[in-house]
Image 1 (cartoon, rainbow, N blue to C red):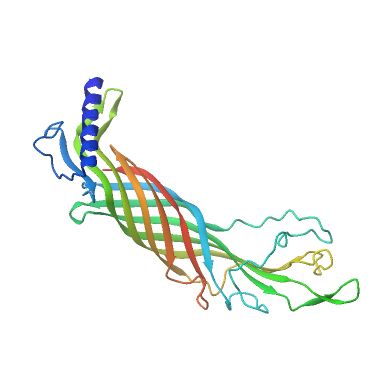
Image 2 (cartoon, rainbow, N blue to C red):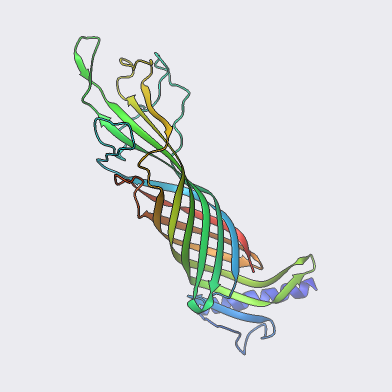
Length: 323
């Protein structure tokens, strides 16, 4: 029985390979099908294959590659007032942002939190729509975003040991830690691959599992992404950059915190993104896996009173099942 099933599957795979190489696209089964009309029920292969009807349920996550911050000459009422303006450009030179211990040149144990964007949990439902030649999908997710703005001030001076007024570099930093509940509605278009359904195949060693569908395809996708801000923790501090061995604040450190994990009063409560993606999806029986690279373009600013845009690049993975 097992040998017969394996042989049948092998013939079906060879049929798919031959059709893909030839660039064929067939809906239903042709008269000269290698494995016969009684076995294959639906075949669509080649460029822009038409998916079979199915509903998929997935769980996944996102690997952050880069979050690009775009802000320049920014002023906002949501922070403690500073001399200059906020910018995404990091003015720190090498080693200047190391936090020192009180009245010491040794580094403190404090570490700056990691920056970037991450989605530890994605729940997805998708529906194949054969007559539209596409797949509609809806994602619900939990998101986190961490980014910084900077402001360099070189106007201040201190009296050096030589008795001469000396300018120093002082940097204000805004670290913004935000958490969201988001939803994304989109469509994907299969570009190249194969969709096949057949009579169920049961293997003797896996009696509880039947194989009645195979799919492997590359796709492009586009979606609208909305995220509601549920937690905002902003920390603002000012730091001596280049005169740490000669100058300290009243607390003995090179850093003074002005705002600690407070919600920005001007934080945009609803963020919108236009999302484009390219990926690959495979299905074997009921089990399915997908991986895609994406870019999310911001349609709204982080702040209500200033333009601070975050563009995201990354990779999404998801695993689930179809029925």
